[in-house]
Length: 202
Image 1 (cartoon, rainbow, N blue to C red):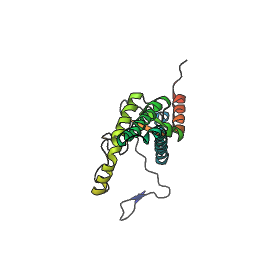
Image 2: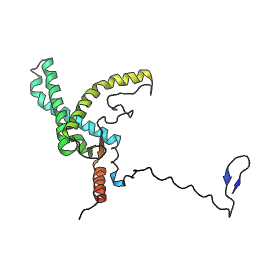
Image 3: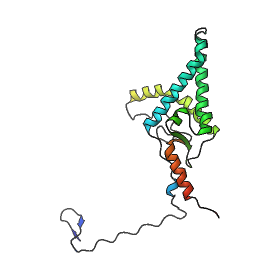
Image 4: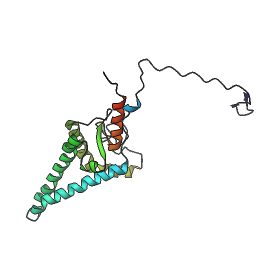
C-alpha cells in the first residue's frame, strides 16, 4: 500500500495485503434487533389514498342527495342546509368510525384495497381511537384554506401547513393518533410473516 502524491489518499499495489477492517462495535446492553416480520407495512401510495377519499366523497354526495331530495323543494335555506349537513355528518361518522371499526376501513378504502392499522403493532384500531381521529379530521378540514393561503403568502417552506394534523412531531400529514393507511395485500403479508416468526408452544 502506498500514498498517492498530492492527494493524501492510499491505494493498494498488486500483491500488497489489504488493510484489516476494524471490528464492529458490540451492541449496547439490552439491545435486541427486531425481526423482519415485526416491521410495520409501509403506507399506501398517494394516488390510492386520494382515490379512496374521492370515492368516499362521491358516496357521501349520492347518499345525501337521495335522502334530502324529497324535502329540498319545500324547505327554506336554513332547513335545506340542515338537510344536507346532517346526513353528511352521519354518513361520515358511520363510514370512518363504525364501518372502519368493523371491517378495518371505510367504503372508499375497502374498494381501493386499503386498511387502517394502529402503530406500532399493525393491529386494528378501536372505536374510541377512530372517533378521536374523526373529530380531528372535522377540525382539520375547515382550516385547510387558511393554511393554504398562509403558505402562499409566506412562501414555500416558511411556515408549517398545520400543527393539528402532524401531532406536533414535525412530520406533515402524519396521523396524530398513531394510525396508518396500508395496502390490504401488504397487511396480509405482514401478518403471515409475524405468524410464521412467532414461536410455537408444544
